[in-house]
Image (cartoon, rainbow, N blue to C red; front, side):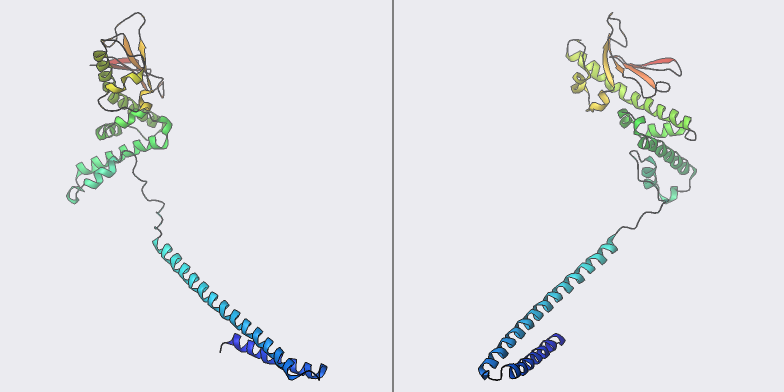
Length: 277
């Protein structure tokens, strides 16, 4: 018998004894039947209390099981948590992870060669240059997407990333190269438009969309506009050309003009213009 049931039984016995004693003192004339009724009532109350105690005991066992299950889940969750990265852990790959791609393909025998070390160092420098665009998105233009691995390595080789001025110059050079990659695509699209429309010029950049060999996003096209010389003077093969909207950095960036026969670029810093056909 549990301790709780023992207490209930003792309570019942004491209550029954007290009832008999009280009855004998206050109502000596009560019959035995009245006494038995009171005893039965107390017995019923005792049974009710015992049942309630049993129910509460079962509920407590269920709660104990639930608590144990939750503790096991917490333990498993703590074991599955990833180990935090150390403060000096290398940053995640950027949009152009040249260094990581090279390192992944490098074999053990190549690891100590001067060539491998030089290329790896250059690739790391190219990744560093790319990270400047990631950290300063206002310095990036959509045409950056057209740079390939060779462009990044070439830009990194000539970049001075040790001073703020050098970084700004390197970013401008990257924008220049990116626009130079995109310019031939504009030349081809413009020439295709003229050929398909009886030499009639387009009036908006949106009209050129179907004439690109690969799709060009709206953000890139929005940086250019169609211009026509009112005098009809030919420039780069026609009186209608495509001009770049204001440059990101007028003091450092080149300004591009594209026609059906080629494109030209000029900069304020060097005051020159080159044509490519």
